[in-house]
Image (cartoon, rainbow, N blue to C red; front, side, top):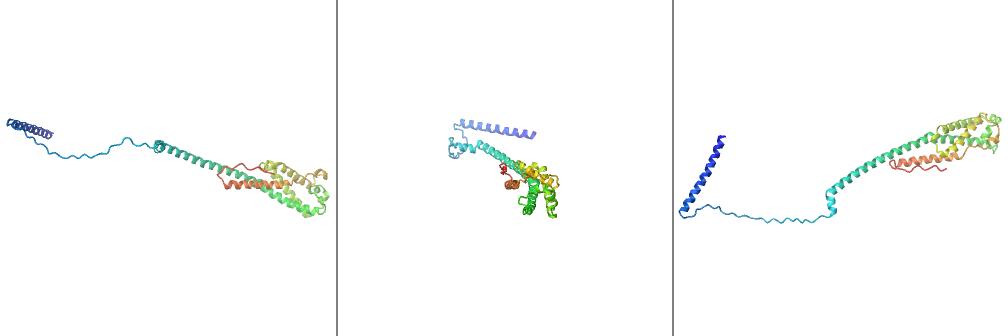
Length: 265
């Protein structure tokens, strides 16, 4: 601390000594009638560089460029990106929901085919072939032959050979299976088919009763009770309609489809 004070004092003393010496020299020169000579530093050249004038009247940009490159454009770009993101997410969600909806419909259609129409068509076609063979054999003797009417005759039933009895038994078994399908799976059936299936079920029931000898021989009473031939064609149309719908849904699982076309009989 003392050393710094001594240094400062020395500097101050040197300044005062310089000023005193200069004053004395000026006084002596004045008394001698000569102007005091003061050292003048030599001049030095200074170069001034020319700076281009700054233009304050910059040309204005078009309005559309100001919008696109300014804060407005940035905001619009952000908004567009957000909207596109929401749209894309919504589109994927909608497609997923539609696909699930189509899968549910496909499952429902396959259930109808597998649990009713498929088995019913198979058993019905089998019964049709058995009935055709049986009728053709007996129509060769009587061209007005009707299986149901003939079964009401105890003497005729007793005259049947083993083959005919076996065919009749199988036809009755199939008829009972078809009746069970109609009763148990009617919820899977198109409403337009219900009246036709009811006629078929009634015919199967009468065949079973007649084969057991529970119907009296009154041909006129049962002459109008025949198997509804339109049923076979209606079942085929319904199976084709359901299968076509499944193909359409599987081809474009994520698309919204029109409702299935109505059954046309």
